[in-house]
Image 1 (cartoon, helix red, strand yellow):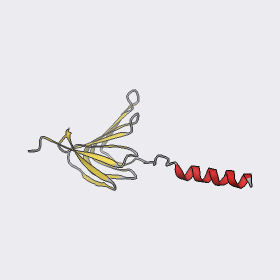
Image 2 (cartoon, rainbow, N blue to C red):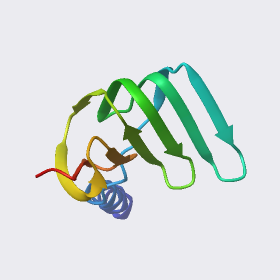
Image 3 (cartoon, rainbow, N blue to C red):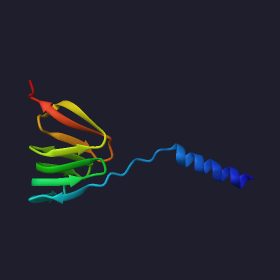
Length: 114
């Protein structure tokens, strides 16, 4: 009986706590890629296409990915699909998108809009 109680308790505990969602970055295409191992910054330029579990970017002018912070920043002209919530951010320049892997919010810049 004690064993059954312990198993049920463990089962409840595991279902109660939410573990962070994984979010895998896949770079599908880029004309140029450069990685700085010291800073952990990867820079991709020219027709950059990538996907994560929540985000899909096509034909971006430039994308940076910081491996230390898991932050993706997209610049220029691009097509975007996001499964969760896109939020307007007046601190980011117009046309810039900022997203951190695993989050359910991406931020789109509109600084300079009138």
